[in-house]
Image (tube, rainbow, N blue to C red):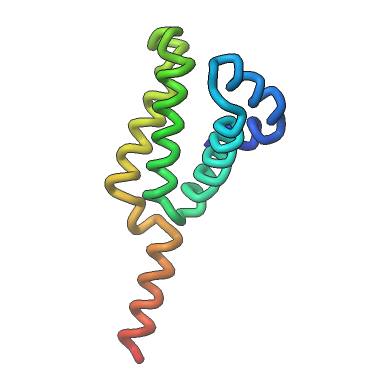
Length: 115
């Protein structure tokens, strides 16, 4: 997602044009690019995992419904569907022991227990 967001932000004019071509407002192109870039980075870093997964899942629903569904499953919406599934899992489970936020929270709990 990070790579797709960076790609959209790097060519934001063409991203806006593509969104307008499918009947969507320009602001949605900016929002999608930012969500994909920031959300992807947050997932990699293990911070804000649940809200990032929810927002990324919503972007995948949009991609499937507005663009990819008409292309069919193979070569169309198969990849966004798998990313939606991963987003769904992370939205409900978080990333627990692998998340930086969890490591930091557990470290703080250990410090509090020893105080």
